[in-house]
Image 1 (tube, chains in turn brown, cyan):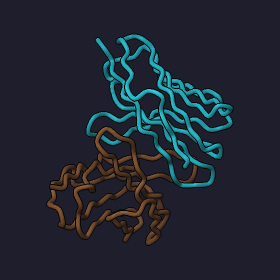
Image 2: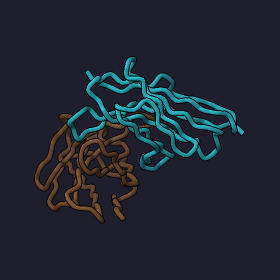
Image 3: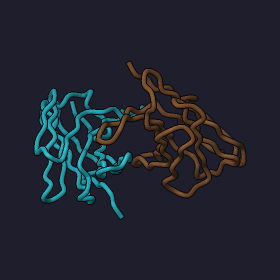
Image 4: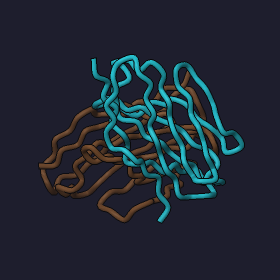
Amino acid sequence: SQTIHQWPATLVQPVGSPLSLECTVEGTSNPNLYWYRQAAGRGLQLLFYSVGIGQISSEVPQNLSASRPQDRQFILSSKKLLLSDSGFYLCAWGQGINYGYTFGSGTRLTVV
Amino acid sequence: GESVGLHLPTLSVQEGDNSIINCAYSNSASDYFIWYKQESGKGPQFIIDIRSNMDKRQGQRVTVLLNKTVKHLSLQIAATQPGDSAVYFCAENPSGTYKYIFGTGTRLKVLA
């Protein structure tokens, strides 16, 4: 069966520090991968998605970047965190069009 | 812009009653819709989906209704239980894309 792993679960980082969040999927090949951010009490904002290795689509201009070095690995990064980067970051995977996502357990990032 | 919105940010229901959560979408090109349930501190979980060639789909205690004429989705939960307390999101998939657009969510509170 397919599983998605996301870590760390929580993270507190100072303003100006770098960020690296990792997401991996097991049990499937060539998944579509997604990074979402959720502000407290708000909806889900799509940040990046990838349909293949090295293919990254950015949805909103921001202080973050994403990479997909391997088929089932998706990384969210920042060189210098801002206070506004705080939030709940969710990785998800899907297979094709018109199929739902499966979400990871999320990373709660607090920038102080 | 295109968006998915919800009519009620918070819904309180008595345990055992039926719940109805509503959602409006604005992209007439969307042909696939999903309802997700998100418990506090966790990633969203798939509940039920519906394709645009259907008006109704039933699962275990849940029913999704789709009215394409007015671009409206609803999620009905029968005999609501305390474990149903969560935030519910509808999401739309514009035809031919790999992306889902999420609304801001409705918090369902089940009263004992």
